[in-house]
View (cartoon, rainbow, N blue to C red):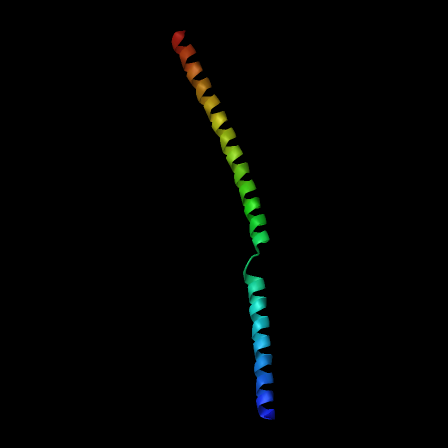
Amino acid sequence: MEKDRETAAKRAEEQEKELAATKLHIAETYITKAGLRETTDQIMSAIGGVKAAVENMTLRVDRIVENQSKAQRTTRAS
């Protein structure tokens, strides 16, 4: 009977160690919902900045093309 208790105690100790190792692995490997939300917000903010920069570049290119076509029309009209 005493041997059974010792065996059970050893098993319980091993299970505690395995559980602690599993919890540590999960904490080191996986992200929380709040952490994921924060990271997603940062990425979306950065994408918004890129979108604004692309839109600005598009407007600038449009102005360049418009100015070139105006210059060609004035040159042809002369």
